[in-house]
Amino acid sequence: MKNTIVVGSQWGDEGKAKVIDVLAEHADVVIRFQGGANAGHTVVVGDQEFVFHLIPSAIMRPTKTCVIGNGVVLDPAQLLHEIEELEGRGFDVRGRLWLAENMQIVMPWHVQLDKLKEKAAGKNAIGTTGRGIGPAYVDKVARSGIRLVDLLDPEGLRLKVESILEEKNILFTKVYEAEALVAAPIVAQYLEYGRKLAPLVANTALLLEKAIKAGKPLLFEGAQGTILDVDHGTYPYVTSSNTIAGSACCGSGVGPTAIQSVIGVVKAYTTRVGNGPFPTELDGELGEKLRTWGGEFGATTGRPRRCGWFDAMVVRKAVRVNGITGLAITKVDVLDQLPEVQICVGYKIDGRLIEDLPVQMREFENVEPVLETMPGWMADTSKAVSWADLPNGAKRYLERLAELSGAPIAMVSVGPRRDQAIFLP
Ligand code: IMP
Image (cartoon, rainbow, N blue to C red; front, top):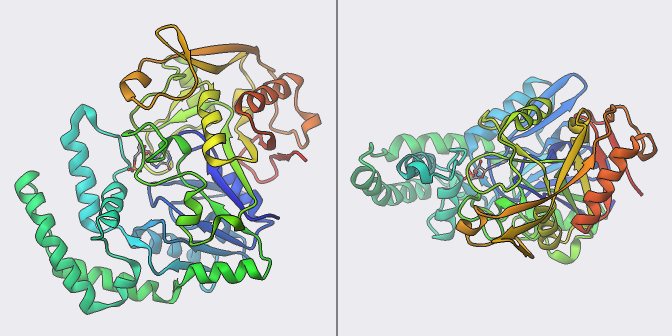
């Protein structure tokens, strides 16, 4: 296998975990490179279901190495919880899971600030997952973050936390009229996390270089989706990291020339959680049906996902900004019962077609999607094991999605199980 980046090509929740799980069979090392515990990856193996927020799901394959790279913002309590759950269910992670020593830590003030900001924003709230992601990235860029390596340095951590809280507590008490945070218990708690995580801390960029030199294939596991990217998404209704393929390099310390392929995961329709524009959203009965059939509820927050038709404007942009070499189209089976399906092929503003997604959100809220209608296939796709097994209607629909998106289909997924995946040459 080539060194491959897998990214979400819509607003997240495209079914990346399943695609990554299937591709991981052919990789040696799987790397998370951005985001944090805002991601929720559900993987079904046999009759067991696992939800991961931080650990690459490939950890369930006993021969694979997993890395959480420097681009991630790490909530150590959540990570330890995942490790304990995996170990409790018989999966050994020691010696196979490595954490970048220069990774940023999500601290209690980040979570508190995320929630206070959202509450204060009222109807203008972003609809975040409340995991402290935005504030943690703010502090990273402001050069006032705590890194994993700091959790291994008791005196250094105490000095940093005390100095950071001097400033944060003014914000909490004076601006938000909230309780101040106390340094000592936080320092004690995070040193305890550091002690527990110490055996997993590594220079992961070096580890990855050695893997590349040994010819071991790497698989980069993106979280969220392209249109939630802080630069290329529907700003400000985005997450606070770069979610696109280029971020895999910054977030892992691997150079771009080491990457040979980029798989863009797209759902056969569109969903979004949180606020912000969504031109193909279906508010009524049909949206409700897609939500029910597709089990469209957030893996992290349990929130119902907003559902709508496939939006080729969105995926065309994703193909461009990620350099996607192949599409993995998921959840095709969710559309099996529809007599007809629609695709958004363009956007109009004031009756005029526009070439790309508007950058100005007030314009984006007003775009009129141009919809193309195709007959449905009204047949079960979930048992198809090859392209030839798919009903003709489904094949035509998928071919049209690829044509409009500008990238070939690499894989089609017709259900949550590992074996419900069709690979195209
Ligand atoms: P945050 O990442 O918690 O700051 O949330 C910012 C926006 O990104 C909100 O609209 C969230 O619903 C969305 N978001 C964050 N993580 C995910 C994800 O894994 N899937 C889908 N949406 C997400």
